[in-house]
Structures are given as C-alpha cells and as structure tokens.
Image (cartoon, rainbow, N blue to C red):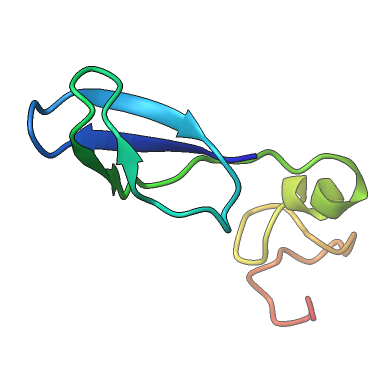
Length: 80
C-alpha cells in the first residue's frame, strides 16, 4: 500500500499514513486530533529490472559508437 504525507490544519504537525488509494484522504492529526489534509508530493521513483530495461544501456544513434552493430557511426541514418 502507498504511504501518504499529511499536515495538520491546526498545529502544522507532519505525519505519514499508509492506506489504500480508495480510502479517504482526510485523517485526524495524531498530536491534536484536528482535521489534516494530504500533502501532494512528487512521488517516488522506481527501478525496472529484467528484460524491460535490457535495451537502455545500448548506445543511441548520434553517438560515436554504433547502436545496431554496423561499422558506420550512428550519426548516419542507417539505424532504424
């Protein structure tokens, strides 16, 4: 389940709550029990593992090396 950040409307207390995406966003402050609102954050990153990222380490067209095994540099339009 995702972790959400909250800020109390009354005392400014910051706290985290783990709950499903279907649950309500309103939570009482654990310090003063006043209403709190979820803080919208930038989210978290993730790492892809396995075959999905296998092609990400290959050189890209336009570099000095080739991306498709050709002897011609990738600046040439042969990479398709």
